[in-house]
Length: 150
Image 1: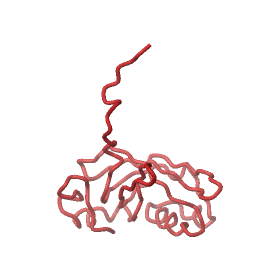
Image 2: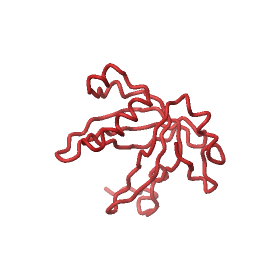
Image 3: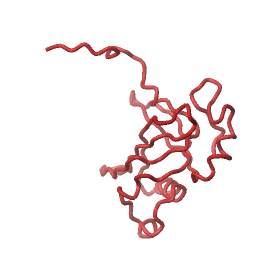
Image 4: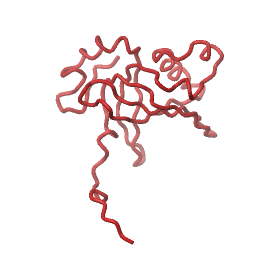
């Protein structure tokens, strides 16, 4: 049986794949992924602000290698992760859900694979101040969402 699926042949990338800028987000879900060389925490974020991106979601990775632990710690601290679990060097997948904060993102393509980089983090309480850093309330003039960084 054949099914007609409009847009299947489209060579356009998903609009969420190219997110770039500052976003107030909520962690929808987090998973610890065991990988022999580079274990990582995979996160699904839902955008809360700016309003033009509200409800969109994207995935990001934070690696758990010795060299990359600083970034995972930065994320957990700024998003209000349980300090007791953090002090015990534990990441609880259930405790990741519903964390809120500001994330600075960029988009990268490596060997034909599309990745959403998680570049910077800040507490959700800093959103009001940070959203005014870049023009158009966190959106670049080209509409992609821009940032002067955190």
